[in-house]
Image (cartoon, rainbow, N blue to C red; front, side, top):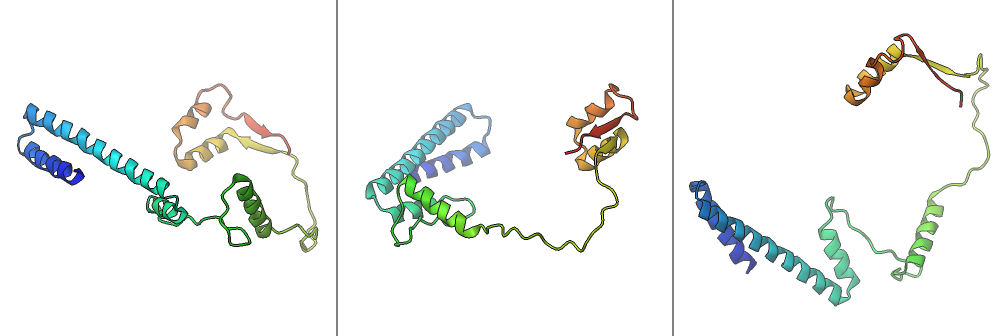
Length: 165
């Protein structure tokens, strides 16, 4: 039924291209498109119901993997005993265990910084409005921020001071 509707739609499209001003042809093509879309939706819904009714986890994962845009496969979560994990609590336990395996603990040893003597300590930073405007222009001409510096609320040489952290 879907193929028949698609070929009918294609046939009407070709006729419509040859005579684009025919209103009755446009109406027939539009109704055919709506019918074709409805058939596609019902076919997809019946395929999904068939997958769910099969109660097969592998078939479900194949179905999902076919529809992923980047085509990387989604694997089922398996616990240490090679059993599929299905409950939310067990999934959380497995993901927490994987996270703890991949994160290293801090050993408390500071790296050697070659005895750097600090000449001064940074207490505050001052930005001139000209520097801020130049930075905004370098970001990619963000027009939504330019109005902040061109509104003449502050004098041009007013320093913007950032308090120390």
